[in-house]
Length: 340
Image (tube, rainbow, N blue to C red; front, side, top):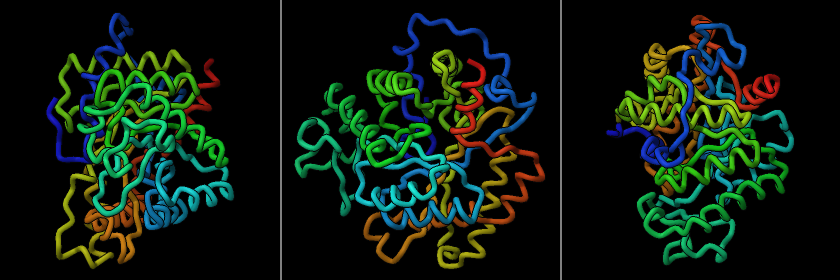
């Protein structure tokens, strides 16, 4: 599997990790999309417009809220170990209908802003010499004890619930839960145990296959894992759109919001023209970066571009014109429950 320069590591080792998970399991051929299985008409394109990294910073929270309230974004996931989660939890409690999941976090990748495990010193294999999560997925794989991984993921789920957040789904920061078969087993097992849908493309995977150059054999492993999740009573994605973090903001547009909005929206529209029928989750990083965000990361212009696109009237018009249905994880789980 060859990776594109998109959002770091989301697709890394998808199928390699699932080889062990799906060993000995034989799924029936995927003749219909998961959208059709949930009752959508044949040929329907269903999209989740998802915001990652909520709770990472005040600017991340502000961007997510703008994208939800003023734009077409309709889903998000929260990084529970980060410092600005209480601010967003306060917003969530005043807006209980939000489609809010957990961005399961085992890495802390920025140099000047770090965070560590919810479990603190109880999981020493998850931290570096400064007491923060390891900076890279490779370091997590090298050092993490599986019991510590499971304990930390459970702690993030329980903390969310203690803060009044009822997670509608889970995904994985920097793709860490797909880095090894054992990590993926924990991810899938806890999703099934808690009854929380997880981000795992188990359908035709047209876009993610192109992005990651997934082989036919690897594709079958993903489909087997998707069938396992479906049979456990959880909705499953047909595909994953994970392109925008690999796009480049032209330097001359970085300070010109109207021009950047038009440019970035068109990039999304061009990519959406390749959507196939089924349920596709679109990963965005909507952020409203202040002058201090550059002290965290140099990704501010890209994240601002995502926010501008998600709040563009042109994008809303595109979905209406193309009759693409916008759905949330909460809606998908409701449909799945009705089939049990």
